[in-house]
Image 1: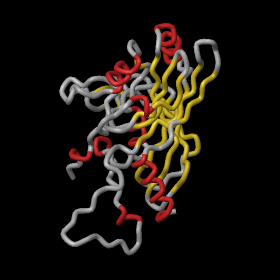
Image 2 (image 1 turned 90 degrees about the horizontal axis):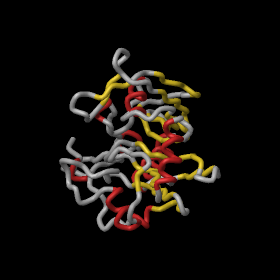
Image 3 (image 1 turned 45 degrees about the vertical axis):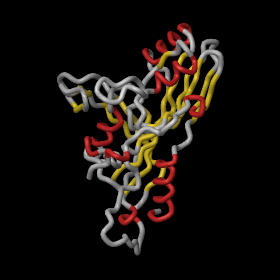
Image 4 (image 1 turned 180 degrees about the vertical axis):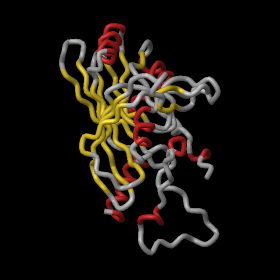
Length: 250
């Protein structure tokens, strides 16, 4: 199924509308899906979070990245001191992040840890588990809500490798919904709703048209040592998916 025509960034995006926290040192936004964190080399270069942020704030810097399809909390630093402060916390693994994912299958994850090294494939678009050449990667998973054939999972990455959560969930036979790169199947309303009727000669579309992964919380220390804990609400597509599962598949 080709969903490319649905994977487009919102029009007339204003970075100020995405802000969920701001002080003199940091801006935290709730990144929408389909917007790259940085300018892409091959795709449309007219839109990225960093470009939008610099148009509004001047010399501001991304402190970390989120995949293009991943939504949620993304931190930017307003000055070099703030950037160094958070960079050191990332280096020492002191930043606490929490992601939510909807995965295929009904699973009971009670602090299940995956400790498997990750290597990036030669084309740079995906990763694989590689016990010989891979880099250390660790993620802990918790079931938030189990449905008939799907699960809402809380994911706590200890390290920050590319596609870490996605490939680690694949290793647990719980690939993320709408993530064909790592074996995740699409989810359709007809799968969870009884007596579902599709209009004649129409194609049913998935409930979510991107990898069902959301960066829900981030926890770090401000420059003065104050602890900041910011939560990014679900975007509309993720919220609709979870609500439909709750309504029809609990």
